[in-house]
Every structure is written in C-alpha cells, then in structure tokens.
Image (cartoon, rainbow, N blue to C red; front, side, top):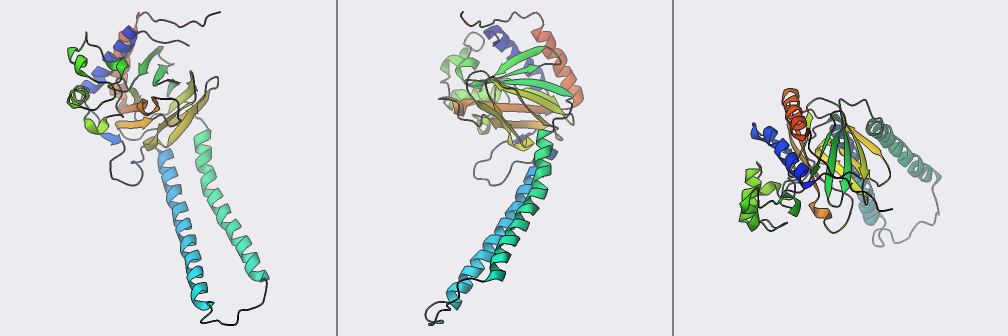
Length: 304
C-alpha cells in the first residue's frame, strides 16, 4: 500500500493551515463531559436516526410503563392476603392472542419507520466530492480521488506530529500526555484542551451542502470510520471496499474516532472533519494541490 513520506506528511500539515488560518468554523460535533444525548445533527441522515431513536424510545417507555402497571396490579389484586383462594384456570385464549398480535403490530410499526433510514444509508448517491479513506494502525489516510492528492491524519500530539527541527518546543512534548506543553501545541493548531484526543494534525475538508461519498478500506486490521454528528459509521476491512455518504448542512468542525478495536493505540485514532463554504473549499483545494504538486512519495513494496 502507498504511504506518504515524512516530507509529504509535513506538507499535509501545511496544507491545512490556510483553512485554519481563516476564521475557524464553530466546533459543533464533539462529546461534552457530563452531558447526555446526541451531538447536534449536521446531516439529514443523523436527524433521521435521532428521530427514529426518539420514536423507539417513546414506544419502549410506554411498553415499560404498561408492563410495570400490570405487575403492580397483579401484586395488589392477587396476593395471598386479598385473594386467599387462587383461580385454577390454565390459560386465556383472548389474552394469548392479544399478547401475540400486539407485539407483532408494534414491531411492524418500528420496521416501517426504520427501513427507510437504513435504505438512505445503503443507497449511495453520486458524490460531489469523492474521498478514499484507509485505516492504518493508528492513523487515517485520505485520498481526494477527483483531485489526485492524499495525506495522512494523525492525532495531534502523537509521535508522528512531533518535529523538533520545525518546532523546537516539540522536544518538551510527551506523546499522548496532556500537559502545559501539549496545551500550547493544541492552541497553536486552533484547539484547546477540550479537543484533546479529538484533534488531528490534518483535517478532512469538505464543502457544505454537497454530497460526500467515502470509499473505505483497511490496510492492516479492521478499523471503523465514524462521525456521530453525521450519522455515519462504516467498518474499514482489509481487502474490501465499502462506502458511506453524507451531506453536511452546517459549517463547522466535527470529530469522530475509530470505533473498532484495532490494537494498542486504538484510543489515539481520531477523525476531524471541517465543513466550510464552497468558496473556502475551492481555495483550500487550490492551495493543497499546489502544495502536493511535484512532492516525491515513497512506496512500501512487499518482499518477494
């Protein structure tokens, strides 16, 4: 599999700077300590899933309340004190038919609303932007196949993002440890301690209100690419190609993480997606393609 050299990785960092040097989009899709509920839905896919979840939650809550009420009624009505002589019947045909038919109707109702959401996920439309995603231990590689460039994306603060020659302060950084030195590095990249273990050195940049199609695979073991605010999740399986799509409707920065246990550094494999205006995206593309033009790339070749 093709891997970019350190020089290319550094170039990828630089290509992200013009986009981040502008007014940084709002950070929308991230977990918040102590909060409950979903992240704000940034796609119709996510909104549909969240609405479906709410509907199923209402149904489950009503069933739970109904069953709890029946239990309380049975305890009060048929305990030994109030009902010393128990009934001797063994079954009730009407009740048995009811508890068979009613659950079937409930399940069919859930199916009617859930299948359209599944079909939306699985029916891949034609993409305005097409990106190939490769999961590696333990970073992501992105190839913008329509424009002929690619880059790696590592956890900001991992060994791959430390370069003492380019930034002498990196000598004080301890990989995977959030301290004062790491907070400075995060701040220089436009983040704060709340984005620790979420922010990456390079980001996936996509335009708002455009259909993004991602073709996903794995280079070594199974990984999983997911952005909760987009309502998408797809396993990256070595030797197989899978696809997902989303159409973000709000500019901002969104975070995700590898969601398939993939080895010792699985916890340090985040995903950062920046949704920008079409004008900003075109400018980013121009700068990025110029940055990568003519940059030599290294290849790993399997031994014969």
